[in-house]
Length: 455
Image (tube, rainbow, N blue to C red; front, side, top):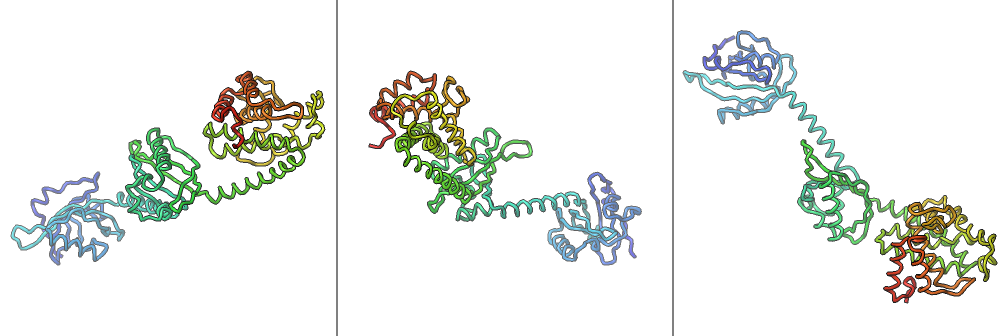
């Protein structure tokens, strides 16, 4: 065994630096060399005993893989140096240890030998962290690309910076055709503007938008219904750097719910037909009330679900009269107190008839409250002001307007002018002022005629 003496310049540079896990070494590239000159830190890193400044081992035997060793030497011979060469080395106990090697190839003073000198840094901790991050990233990417929802990330300019496979496949485009684009490149201007406004709101407020239901026009020309959640993305300092969106297609579910709703409405319409056969006047009245309420709701800018609720409420609000004797319903003269109480029961009758049917809106309560008045003079509960649903307030004005405009069994039609006078007199006392004013505007636009009747 040949022991090589240390070079003077090397011995001057060996300093222990355990805190940084940095090992300094020097090795002679000759076949018989079996000693690595080092500091104690390198010995500790590799698990060797440290004797008089050297480790009793050949440098090339430290490499776990033959190919790694050959690549290291190839780079070293070609460039006379290697910088941060990342490789697993073999510890004395045979276990691998990830390190980086930075080294230079230098000749001896007599130029008869070549030496490697440099440093080895233990990066096993960093490698474990990196491996864990890689595993988590792979897990995230796998989840992202296999989840059946469109997931997308946008920067602070609302440009798409990443999208999952479901989003890409649904768009019918390639990934490179999506990245860097905005919603204005894929959707109608109005729809894209709504999406842009939502993204901007999240960026400005830092508050997520959760579970927003919206309709999306597809490239095929068909509409689908989706539910979207948008949340802010933040960097390590808590600064918002973009948004993440998750959109789930719920068209099939929405269609099923619509079919279910249509079935319930159809069943109730059968009862309406029965009411029409029994009392054509009441049926005509309810149909007109529904038309008035629908137009008022449209002026208020309600969405289609709320408009459907108010229209259906109007069509069914007198359904409870189906149980009232016709001689009372069509009595030409004034009702006595008992007869009037029977008439009032139609509200509760209708409520009991539909209260257990599930609707996506409070249909039963709207109908139950349509005879309530702001001052508490109504029935059946004597509710006041804000205790009354807005839909019920619309129904109340619509009911009075239609009833006074048309003929009743006990009187002739009073006309639009008289109906407006009654509503004006009781505005803000019994009836909601905003709703009354909307009805007046609609009548005025129609030339002081019934705006709910087609020309």
